[in-house]
Image (cartoon, rainbow over all chains, first blue to last red; front, top):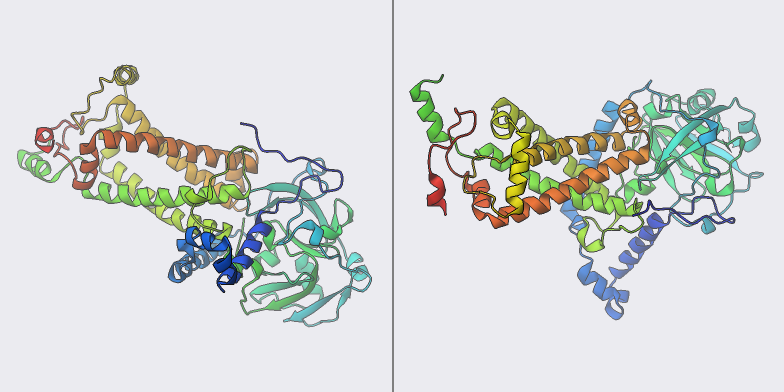
Length: 263
Length: 228
């Protein structure tokens, strides 16, 4: 049996889009519709309802599973090594372009207009003046060549650069004793990370990939890149950053994925 | 040597599968079921072999997140129960008595007997050399699947461990092959248990009484005949 390979195309990123997460989200939406019994009653959807029963969906079961997931968050926090650096790699190992992933296919990416875009700041931050892309580019840059690990199982080596998140937050007078940093994205995606991850030396606000300004599908103009979290924690197209003590569920944690998602 | 009184006490209280072993065995069966079913769901999200995708009907969890939730729940049962088993097996000397010594010559003799369908299985209390190798092997696989699972879960926090595998995808492969070994083991194990039903009964009732004092696990009660 051959190791699974994908067909390359000149119009797409070298590694084609993995749409399984997107497909699943679509099905999820469909499933919610079915609960209205409108489609199911008149279509094959009825059949899916008969066979698609999943014990994980039963309320108490789902509650219990999420409680274990929350307990696992605590354990992951406890074993997090603040000063331990993730393995880094050489520029020759870098995948170009990076692999696309979002909760929708690459065709549906709405590019952010960098000229009018600003980064809003909120919460426990002293200087909440918005940042333009140019001001961010003028900040000292840190480059990290790290492994991106997707919860689905794939990985690639990426070369990211931009201001260090801890340095940036110190510059704007953020309260680094707060618990969470919350990211709101142009595509209504939300993500949040814990403070130890925020101040980890390999956590940056990336503006460039392999020395070039990040392309539209990969988070232009600003995205998070942290070496210690799964791919989905690395918010793209960031439009606002909030430092807060309040825990709020994020796009994927609302849908049952593990919130901490440390690697 | 133990005094006769102690020995007779042991004889009256000891059976082939003491209660802790039976509890651990069936908890393990449930844990393995959860881990493999949810693991297949997780595998399907990014398949390793182009020809292999597990049908939706045999995976646990309709959505990826459910598969992950079950896997990271089941791991606790599998690991804690497995640790209890290892501690019990070492502390009571069960591993030493049941799984050792392994004679290489006996392994070949047993395989030959099995191929000629002349395998003796009237004595449940004594594991033949092939059984010893398989049971020891599956314990090792169980340990390796946990180690590779840890490396998959925390390739950065446990980067020293993860680096031993070479690459992240190698860890997935090792984890996958351990699962495959366990699946093959289960097929053989369950088939043989059904062919020799008294072995299945023994895992529920405890089975024939044995003499713990004897290193070879020699039986003192000819209970086999009455169990048939």
